[in-house]
Length: 178
Figure 1 (tube, rainbow, N blue to C red):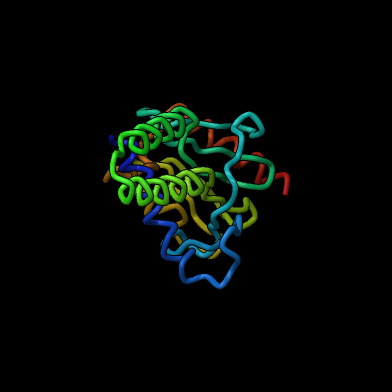
Figure 2 (cartoon, rainbow, N blue to C red):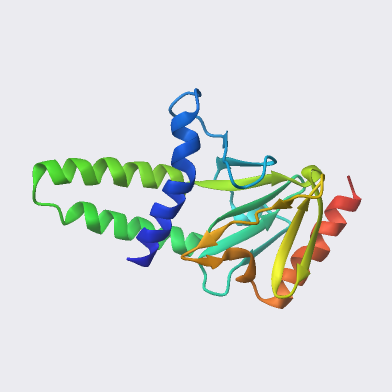
């Protein structure tokens, strides 16, 4: 059930900007408030296509670096688990009205889960590992990915020190090439 809560959190984060946007209903990218102006919502990425991909110790979030982007999304394992729970919730309905409501919510959550928070490497000044937390600094000195909580814990504190330091090194290599 906790993964359904994660899915609903993602839905809550994304729903307000999506609902206020004048973009088409099935737009694949829109800006999310509270993430920093340089972070946008985009289609889910395959971790195997990245320079480095690290997953939180609890296995719920994956942070990736490509040649162009930094990407934060639910891990493949967490996504599979949420999808399974959503399917179970849908299958458990015996009331027609409840079934329709659950189907609409389930399909919306599924669509949102197939997306990522993305920031262009050019829009970041630096990434560091300070006091057990990955810290992303935008090109204008503002924090990026600063408010990404998963189940009331800071997602940027969830990575092992070794993984986080490897991510920082790889980010700095990618940044130096630009």
